[in-house]
Image 1 (cartoon, rainbow, N blue to C red):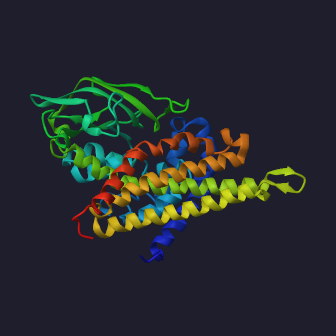
Image 2 (tube, rainbow, N blue to C red):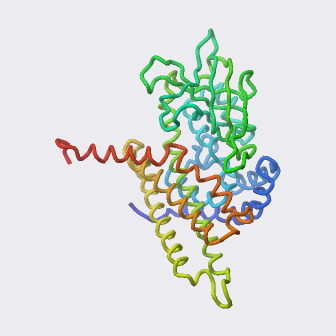
Image 3 (cartoon, rainbow, N blue to C red):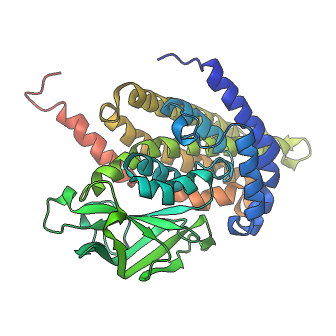
Amino acid sequence: MDFAIPPATAALLDRARAFMRTHVLPVEPTVLARGVADCDDIVAGLRAAARAEGLWLPQMAKEEGGLGLSLLDHGLLSEVLGGSPLGHLACNCQAPDAGNMEILHRYASPAQRERWLEPLLRGDIRSCFAMTEPDTAGSNPTLLRCAARLDGDDYVLDGRKWFTTGADGAAFAVVMAVTDPAAEAHRRASMLIVPTDTPGFRRVRNVPIFGHAGAGWDSHAELEFTACRVPRDSLLGPAHGGFVIAQERLGPGRIHHCMRWLGICERALGLMAARAVARELAPGEHLGDKQIVQAWLAECRARIDAARLLVLRTAWLIDQHGFAAARDDISLIKFHVAEVLSEVLDRAIQVHGALGLTDDTVLAFFYTRERGARIYDGPDEVHKVAAARRILARHRPGRAG
């Protein structure tokens, strides 16, 4: 691998860093104090600035108005944007909308593109992705119960979902529902586009996370579908192709997540170092003089850098050889970077002492919102087992190499 960053990418990253310093970080305290849902005016200003700086839709192809970046280049940019909770939102590449845009780009019919994808690309609406259910193991999506049965020219949905990010205020949901319960496990489900104003669609609540229910984009909702009827042409992609579409959505999404987490790690490490230098424990004695704090800083630096190399190698593999060639690596980065993120945030909070527990820094926001990194998109344990099984399979007797 060539570790040099191409000049065009380096220039893009410089613009992104300047954008974060000039536009995003100055308004971050206000938005986090008021809540994203109450700051539409500020978010709109950030989005206008992102367009002007050529940072809009970095995850999308140029024909969709995006930057047409490789996965590797997008990963590098995602790290920069990840330094603030608002970075990705400002550039319209925030989850879950980014993943929904990608699958709509590939699978939407012309009518679906006009009604849903194009407003999403413009930033006029938001969306959500409803897959996880409260009564079945999220680590095994073949157990999904939410069902959509055909009734004439309609699908009728019944069931429950939860941890549906950003459902509060979303215009539509992409819902993964069982459409053929008798089929083979990975052919049971389909994807359906369900407008949130459809009769029978109910947002039960925003699920409180560490005591914060959130609102708008910064929330995770519980949903209920009761005789929720949508036209047959609400089907996204092929019938019973839900698992294939979900995997196509999750593959690049894990690169996006991991690089965003590394951006959070860099922000936390910077805050930790600044606190260690500034905090005086006694006359002439600072936190940074303590060897244990020095060790934490060095360990965090090494682990962040190692994690970044692993993620960038994975992105490079996908760009060069496709997702199948990077299956092991995708599992490895998912649990490894999530664990590094948890450790770095924990160390940063510890160095800040009681201040780290408050909302006076961004650390508590990151800690409460991102602890789920080790659970969503497949818990750590599932990815470890999946990677281990493939490693063991290559070493079984009779297997060449």
